[in-house]
Image (cartoon, rainbow, N blue to C red; front, side, top):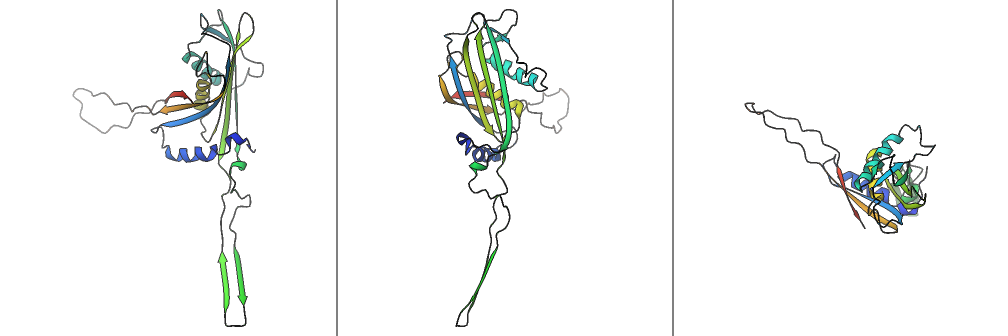
Amino acid sequence: MNLRNTSYRWIGIAALAASALLTGCTTVREVNSSVRSFSSLNAVPTPATYRLETLPSQQGQMNFPAIEAQAQHALAHVGLMRDDSRANLVVQISATARHGRDYASWPYYDPYWGPRWGMGMGMGFGRGMGFGFGGNMMMNSPPLEYYRAVSIVMRDIKTQQIVYETSAQRQDVWTDDAAMFGILFDAALTGFPKPPQGQRNVRTVIQPPEPKTPAAVPGATAAPVSPAPLTSPTPAKSAQ
């Protein structure tokens, strides 16, 4: 599958270089999302409640509950709480994921991977002979990249008019769907309820969590302790 969207032409190379610097969960990571938002809201509705409406195609999907949980978490970040019985907004969400190799962004890719050898020999009237031998090797294929996109649409429950529409997308070599969908939902809601209209870039900085220090036990002798497991990183957003 070829991903030939020119807006992502060099993102695979940059992401691959960045991933080489990220050793485990102990390094700061930056994720740049392409966000597009439109809003007719002047303020957060009161009460700030919504009802989540699922589409027929989403019902029964094995992975949709996890996506739904990520969306609700992001909505809570901007002060919206789910309350189906007294909602002011009707919220619809969607999420898309696919993967492929972006051959168009690798101009030096050679589909016929392998050595290229050449030899030459020449003779003249004098006592001389020439002999040459050379070769080159190209990359096998571009890295496997993952494209993910999310969208959120809000309608006024009384008028059924759309009052908020936003989406976010990202193409990366990162394989963690759960983490990426959460970042995208958060990025899509940046600036709620009055975000910059139209297209913009949102940068999310993921700080590594601090390792937990085991508490000292009175009377216990010091002994080597294995490092505590790291918790999920907490993202911080900034719009550009």
